[in-house]
Image (cartoon, rainbow, N blue to C red):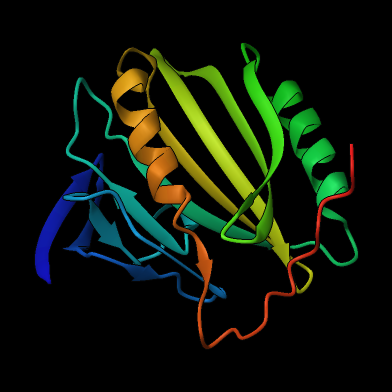
Length: 177
């Protein structure tokens, strides 16, 4: 593994290039996009953070967050997340919303566009519930680079899997629509 110091605004964190990554404090692993840097330093509250080289003031990235959700179902989490995005992002533009399975694990997924300051972003998120904890995987790129980056982000997120240490997949199945 190659170790590199990365600057993000005022933040400095150590990053490593990796072929596969176990996601700390989670039952999941995934393959980061080739050549992207990986950090488990907790930057922006993430369990793990993958990042490409900055381009036009923004670095395409994937981060993984988690939150305890108790008895919340995946369908409920999808609906509340969608409502929260609509309320909290003034120019939220949904591109696609679906329930899917990645390597047999049920996930909710959103693809949307929105502004962050002066940047127009394109975001792809997938989330699963495992043992009363929601895991949110978010990939983002500049809107003008989405044609290049969103397929890379989707390919990486479609490698999400349960680690051997986690054992049997206890993620809940989505309800039929």
